[in-house]
Image 1 (cartoon, rainbow, N blue to C red):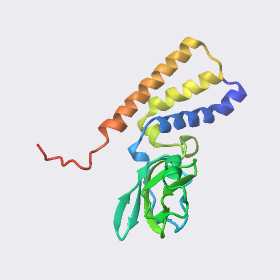
Image 2: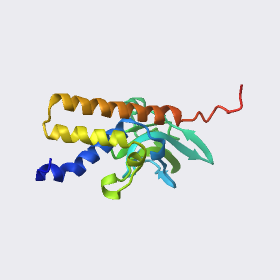
Image 3: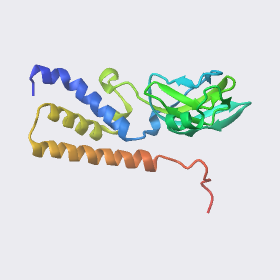
Length: 192
């Protein structure tokens, strides 16, 4: 298809495919850890990094010890700690929206934190290379074809073929990234 509006949308098809892949898999190579971040005393909100996609863990660091917080819904925290003036070392955290995280109870002092999260990398469209392009090219190809064929209002049988191939490639990527690549850091390899 060389129609001008279709051609101009090709980068969007690729970006949409990347977005689908990032939202449907937990790619270990796309994890980051905040360095030097802090929770401010008396402020239960924390602004997330601009490349944040999903949380993995959050720890409050107090006197050199990491205290991992439990992920809860903001409504739980509002119910459990209805008075914002209730302070202490935070024990819970949750996502309020795409840019804000809330902790409870409200911090009684400033705490260093360590946020481990999945990030949204730059698109292959803008950088010409990406982890997905290098390691999951079938998922990227069939995802892009699926998005482009939906745009073209293509034939149902070919649309189904692209969808099936995309789902097959995505499933293979999930097996790789969520099964084979993960390690149990609490289990020693030499145990019998």
